[in-house]
Amino acid sequence: EGWVICEERLLSGSLDQLVLDEVGLAIQLGYLNESDLINTLERRPGAMDVILTGPAIPSRVIGMADQVTELRSGN
Image (cartoon, rainbow, N blue to C red; front, side, top):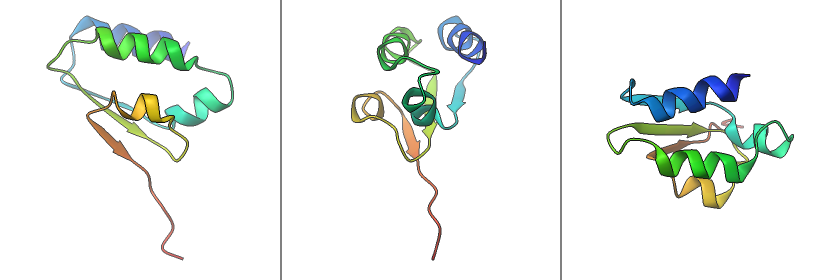
């Protein structure tokens, strides 16, 4: 359900920026299909920035993002 809302927002052009938090984990756990995400990112309006966060983002998806963030412990 969460992806359906994100996909609608990505394609609508109603936002300037969208953060997809832990998207790699969602793909890894089978909640989100990598090809579906890539397809949607390819169809988003050019003015929309997409920020992806998380440690397990597939390289094909990283190339589609405007910004990728991975938080790491300082230990």
